Length: 151
Image (cartoon, rainbow, N blue to C red):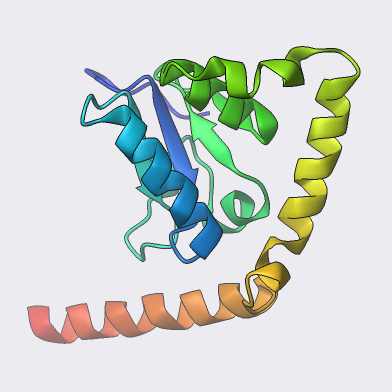
């Protein structure tokens, strides 16, 4: 776990896949609900500049598996609790409140985990291994360009 951020205004940092059309749709909805208040910091893990060190030590591959969030104290949330906390912070806690019920919570976790396993295929994307390889190539190409332009 990384050190907590020093002076933060956000109450949760949501790590999302900006290359996933359904994820982006959800984030757009949440950004509208945040209405510029800065309660939620939205971090696109697909950005080549994504830094695990600035985001609870959560690397790209891990973040691609299940949704993650970082709290101001440096602790992290994974899966359905991320949605529950984001919606609570934005004043819509009732949407995920049912996931707190003992029988419903595990069912919601199961359904989300199945969704997470199928998310890439359902949105017409390559498998995770291919995405990781392509990302590494992009990072290396960017690093090479940056090194050449700095010389």
